[in-house]
Image (cartoon, rainbow, N blue to C red; front, side, top):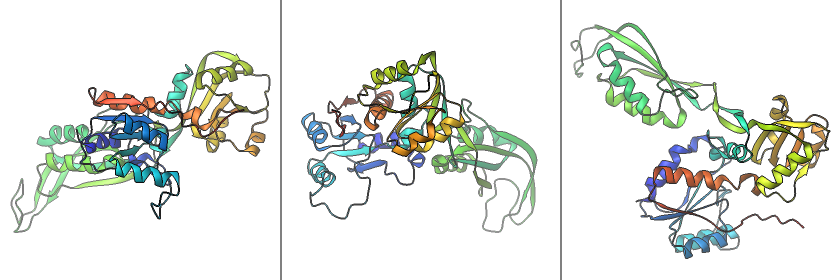
Length: 364
């Protein structure tokens, strides 16, 4: 298949519009028209990983962390990123990344952490805002089902675990076409009144063009009246971090031991034990210090993340057990998410895991 088939699917399954403003997810290197037969998934793209991909005849590398994260002014081979880019282009290896957008999707990085720990009643910790649109349109009664079904098929109408969500109300529409028009009903130059249905539903921002296209193609009118409204609603199914409950409470030492075993974390930094039992847990893969207050506000017994600053530990005294398990350790299972997504859509496509441990941090 062509590279664009794979990247288009990933762009929709892990929407690029979900990424943070500072991020650079998506296709980093490669021609969308390139033919591919195998891919390698990895947390980071390093020179060693690139050599591994070349040796394994993988035409595309799919990573969690973007190779190109900051602006580049030259490709002189002075930095590892520059060297990787030069060699990837020379060897015709494509590179694609799914970063913060993979963090916030329904089955993202933090949820994978929770599942690995065996947590129950998993929910999003900090739901995403500003990613929903309301569509309102007016349809002649005879075409309601056709238009509604087309809009839903394009991806609109999802609210949490429900689909085909919409609302209709009856009314009368009026219009008059000039001499250049070819109206579906009525006569040009004469005002016409038509029994219509007001139909409204919601959709994610990244589906806007697809849904509008489906609307216009299914609607019988020459000129389709529709409105798009940005919404401030949160979606409980997507967002950063997650919360869950342990199958049974653990003493703090036992909980930390669980983290060490599940994530192979050899250098956990944690706040001072308070002698409490841990039942409820919040997690965030990667640098999750910004979500600490949300975890405490949610009444969690423990918060598991990475890259916590020194002074942040003071903020948790007697309030919550804060555990920094390491950036690599908290996100390494992201490769499993990417692998499963690809295999589900393209079951005969060859996908393999990188065997390189890309963690730049060593523990003595």
